[in-house]
Image: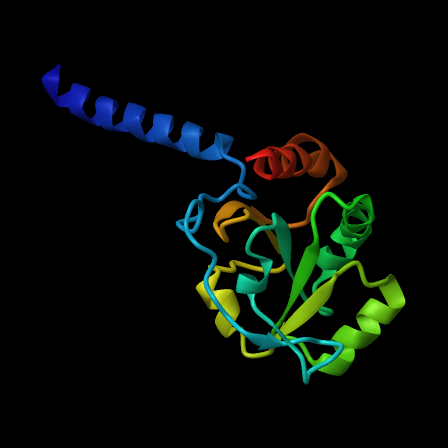
Amino acid sequence: MNRYLLPLGVFAVLVLLLGVGLSLNPREVPSPLIDKPAPPFRLPQLHQPERTFAPEEMKGKVWIFNVWASWCVACREEHPVLAELARSGIAPLYGLNYKDRRDDALAWLKRYGDPYVASTVDAEGRIGIDYGVYGVPETYIIDKQGVIRYKRIGPVTPELVQKKIAPLIAELNRS
């Protein structure tokens, strides 16, 4: 009888772990960067390569950082949501054009509209590595002290803006 209890116990634990794993949302992958300073960088801007952007310029403001690319199908899906978010004025939206060709990125923004205050160019993907980018699109909310408070893997949806992003930005702006 005892020789059946151990395999049964192991099986029960595996079923429990599988059940917990299947209940998790893959878009809400815990990031080691949450509650840590946003990695620093200084990159050329997409529209004006002679000008640069660095996160330190945003100190004192809550802002949204969106990683996107012209070759990204899901970026096209989230683009109208980002455009509406930018029009709402709740926080400035900056982009990181990731592993893309400049001409393709500029043509994409011309075709679909440009919701970004500015987009920077990460052609080799080095900054994406620093930010722990799993895939494009990804979106970060960064607080007034330059600390990452939220990370979204995958497209931003209207429901996500309403239930998570807008309330978080409002809370961060109050503090």
